[in-house]
Length: 202
Length: 202
DNA sequence: CAAGTAAGTCATCGGTCGATGACAAACGCT
DNA sequence: AGCGTTTGTCATCGACCGATGACTTACTTG
Image (tube, rainbow over all chains, first blue to last red; front, side, top):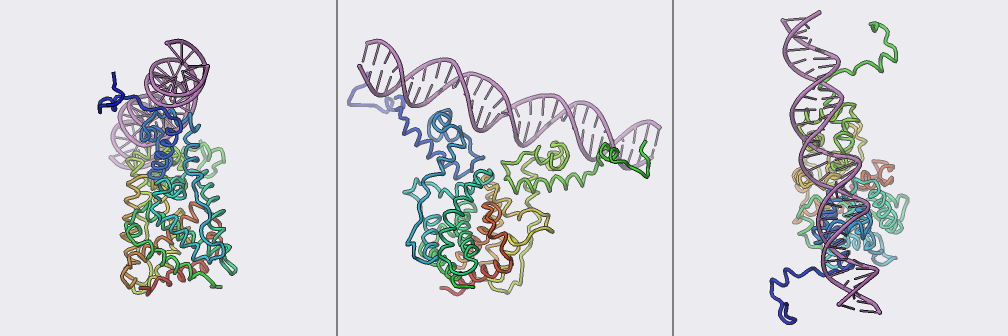
């Protein structure tokens, strides 16, 4: 019989795990985010995710329906809203985006990679590519484009988007240490310089 | 018996295909490049590639050893050498690289995507990521870095690399039409502006 | 033309994948 | 305490994957 006051280590190890639907769901989601971010959709198996979460793989299908649905829920939702002052110039917005996508350590945002980069690593799937295009063009680029003056604001906005995405790829896929080790303020200053060079150029 | 002078359409269709090792190998390589570029390594099956080439999947293993070896050979080799004047500034080199990676229609270079972008789409595999890092850092960034003056030449070179890779991602993965439809000269001019903004900034 | 070699095909193996349904055990309510 | 519900597990299915070896067919050579 186990005493109410003292629980030995053996008791702790042999104790049946607590059953908690919400906690299990969250554990699966976090494990999925980690694995998908690291290995992409195709490179990650449901058994792998479940093992990370410490449960059986069957629960993925009970709680999320399918692997695709799990991916969608892992990626969706936590994408942040538009950042910064709506009246500021494109350089200020680009700086805020750069900090959000690549420079932030993201410790408070679920700990994982930015959803855009997670999707980017699973871009073999056409559905993922479509969602990525939707997200990038509909949200980020549209916001940037509205702050450029001149005829080809769309092109210049796209170049800024390319710079930001490329920074994410450099850090997360190519894994070059330069961007990771650099001082965020210094990187942000350089990004501002590059974007400012695009303003008021007919 | 088929006449030596006249071959009917039915004869053509029923004729056994010509057996040519070199031609088959090339057909497999081209099909592999297309498929890998479009769907990534994991998303592409050997039977798929072989069907595109019009042969049996077994030949892949006979000619290349394994699917991985086929991928390596499909990606390797045709990466172009350093471009442009070695004494030119970083902006000139960046312009040349931009034309090579994203603006070129690549019709003469095998018709497919740039090898860097092909690798990028298969970056779920750690080996591919390692090769990609090797290629990007060892070749492209090193060349850029040597043309920057100042303390953090590596960081500024990496930002230029991020811009170029991001442009490739925008065109090839996100498939935004803006970059594809824009005039290459106009895009190149904007890239030069952005890179020039990084020069001589302590 | 006949024999030998090379090119292409067929059948199949072992493994892994996503997904399903039956089953066992812990929880909550009365 | 007892019972129904919820949570987690096990066994397994069918499809597909990369890969192998035996076999068939076309080309080459003498």
